[in-house]
Image 1 (cartoon, rainbow, N blue to C red):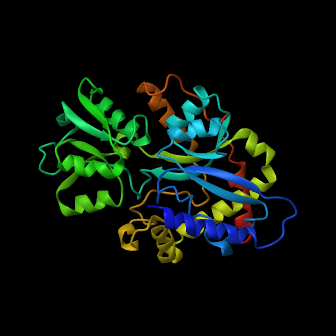
Image 2 (cartoon, rainbow, N blue to C red):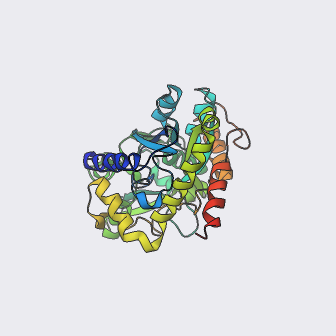
Image 3 (tube, helix red, strand yellow):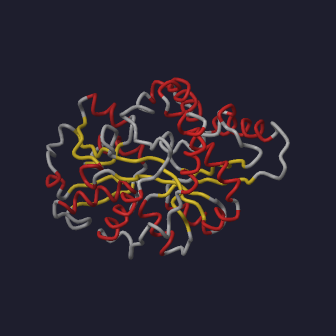
Amino acid sequence: MFGLGRAVLAATFATLALAGPAAADPVNIRIGWSTMPGHLIPVLYSKPEILKHYGTSYTVEPVRFKGSSPQIAAMAAGEIDMAAFGALTLTLAVTNARQDVKVVADIIQDGVEGYHSETFLVRADSGIESVEDMKGKRVGTNAIGSASDTAMRAMFRKHGMEDKRDYTMVEVAFPNIPAMIDEGKLDMGTVLQPMSGQLTAGGNYKVLFTAKDAIGPSQLVFLTAKADFLEENREQLQDFFEDHVRAARWFNDPANREEAVKIVADFMQQPPETLSHVFTDKDYYRDPFMVPNVSTIQSGIDIAVDLGLAPQGITVDPDYVDLSFVQEAKRRIEAEGQ
């Protein structure tokens, strides 16, 4: 599905790398990602004119994964330098994989006032009107322990319900969940944008609850990096983060929306009209300077431990966070009056 997008991206990177001489070899940054258009990582470096340091200080190699969990093993094996993690994934990377990693930037936040929150849908004619009506039912989850899975379990816990005793979780890839609900193989599941909006607008589906209903606003996905990689390449990575933040701001600028959506659509090999929610208030929230919400990461970890998804928790701040890169990026960008 992403073959053409990869080819275009590779050509762009090659052009940038040859654009001018460098005093030293740029640092190649291997970044894990799993979801488009949410993560944006594969397209953030596709606008040469807004990148000041690409090919001189750094290059980027996006590496796709099925989710956050496989990125733990990849980071431990030295196959990637940065990863797109959720709260539980960060905890397991530290406590199980013994990785020294730092939260360094925002990717997407869920349930921020005025923006989208993940939806958990049922058929409108299912007779399911409340969480309690899900007793004895089957629930579609993309992966046990994922951010959406954690939110679902937290909502069921609020209503005195537990997995296996009161309902059954079934792991299903996000795109297949609506079809399985239609076929009667599932009763409820996580449905992402733009499909969520399309299904509810059609009248055959309704939202039973959202992630915000379950756990409040959350730092759904954030960028993490290996601590030793940050220290060994601090100067070059500061240039990277300046460009990273600058690019994210360009994509989220309403003045650039038509072109930004087309870039994303071309990468995903989809018509732009299928991505009408992207970079609007129907999309996830992204901080203007990519500063992550550390307090909601901590809340997510505490919830995961309470649900038994992690054997033990961690205290994110100060041991597992380094915001100096995005803070310096903000300083540089604002100094230019942007």
